Each structure stands twice: as structure tokens, then as C-alpha cells.
Image (cartoon, rainbow, N blue to C red; front, side, top):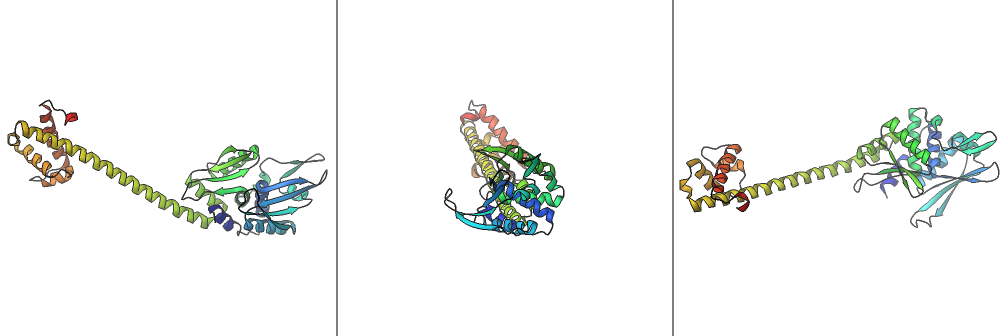
Amino acid sequence: MSFSSKAKNELALIRTEAKCCNRAELSGIIRVSGALEFGGLTVINLRITTENPAVARLVFILLKKVYKLHSGLVMKENKMLNKHHLYEIYIEKANDILLDLDLLRLEGDSILLNDAFPEKLVSKKCCKKAYLRGVFLGGGSISAPEKSYHMELITHNQTYAEQLADFMNSQFNLGAKTTLRKKNYIVYLKESEKIVDFLNVIGAHKTLLDYENVRIIKQMRNNVNRVVNCETANLSKTIDAAYEQIAAIRILDDHIGLEALPERLREIARIRVDNPEASLKELGELVSPPIGKSGVNHRLKKILEMAEKYNIGRGMV
């Protein structure tokens, strides 16, 4: 089962007795998964289609609770995708329902599609959340966090998509953006924190916890990888520096002999040659008496500078 299906199964079990929230949720579902059919000059039929049986049951329940409507539920083969069944609810003479859900509007004697965002249905905070839950149930998807951070709501109208994104951002600060894909307008989130916020808004709390668990594990793995990469880089620098220092020590030994060096330089030179993989801190602990990293670094720089006097620069070592 996909991550989206799990989220929708959880959301489809949410029940509220508030009629205003039921209307808002139903309007959101129909807006993105409903199709209108003309049954005559003034008759409009409604067809609601979904791949998720839990969502289909929810629509059936909401229609019964809000409008006392006993609609029919039909399961069909999805020939286009060839992988899931389609669940279809068909309602004849749906004019009054569509007008009540702000999906149609009256203009004189004409009934027109309403492409605008249904402001009247979402005046309350609870209705705002219910509406977004409906839109997600009808046309939303969310990628498994193991793969990527991406959530989207598929709509069919540019004006509505832009207003939906504005609504999500102004009411819940979700950072939603829109894009065109083929013939659909997509409202999407790509930041993991914003996706978590969205799941919290629509009430998918179990899904949110699952999402957060995966996100935390991924973050920990990334942090470990960064630390390992950093330590590897530091180790490489240590090895390169040690190679350069040992080469300079051998140059001085060949030209003047280590016995000619001041005692402090002679001591650190011999310690470095005997401990080629040691860090500056470890070298300092071997000096008698022990010295700090800056002291070790100062002495080794002196050795490098002395080696350069013999016309053999560091780049040639």
C-alpha cells in the first residue's frame, strides 16, 4: 500500500457531527474528483470517482448525513492505469447539492460553474481544515518520505489552483506553490516541515508520526555521513601534511644532518618520522615536556622553512 493510500485510509475514518464541516469536506472532494454531466437544459448529474474504497465509503456517508441521499456505489476496472479498481458514485439531478456546496452558481436564469474558491464554506477554522482534508482525499498524493519530500493536490482549473495555494499560505503558512503538468494545475509542497504541518492541519496524525520517524532517521543518516566525510577529509589533510613534513626532515638530514638542528626541532623531527600518522595533538603529547598543537605546528613550520632554503620548495617535496 502506498504512503498516500495509508494517509487517505486514516483520514477517511475521521467523523464529525458538524454539518458545516461535512459540507466543506464534501465540497473539497467533489471539486477535485467530481465530473459534471448535463442531463438536459437545466439538469446536471454528478459523477464522483476515486481509486480508494475508503474515500468512496466516506463520500457515501457524507451524502447520506448532509443531504439524506442514498447514492449508488459502483466498482469498475481501471483500464487506463491497469492497476487499480475505480469506485464511482453517480448522482442524478445534483443541481441543489452542487449549488449548496458552492460548486455551481446562479446568474439570472442560468446555472454556471463556479471556479472561485468557496469562501462561504470555510468561514470557520474547523471548516478550513475539513475542506483541505477533502481536497487531499479527492486529488492529493504524498511521496513516501524514504524517497523524497513531495506532496501535491491535483486540480483542473488555474484560477482555483492559485486561490487554493493562497488559501493554504494565508491561513496555515504552508508555502504552497503551483505548477502546470499536462492539463492539470498542481498545488504542491516540497519542504518536509511544511508537509508535516499540512498533515497536522488535515488531521492525519498517525501518518504524521510515521512521516516524522522516517524523516528523523534520514536526518540522522545524513548527519553521520557528513561527519564521516568531514573526518575523512581531515584525515587526508593530516596525511598530506605529514608526508610534506617528513620529506622536509629527510632533506635537512641529507644536507646538514638532524644533529645540526636546535634541540626542539631535532626532537619534533624524530617524533614526526617515527609517527607518520599521528595528529599534531598526538605529536605534542609525545614531546617532553608535552606541548600543544600550536607549538608542534610552529616547530614543523620552522623545519619546512629550513628545507626550502635548499631550493626544494614544498610543492617539490
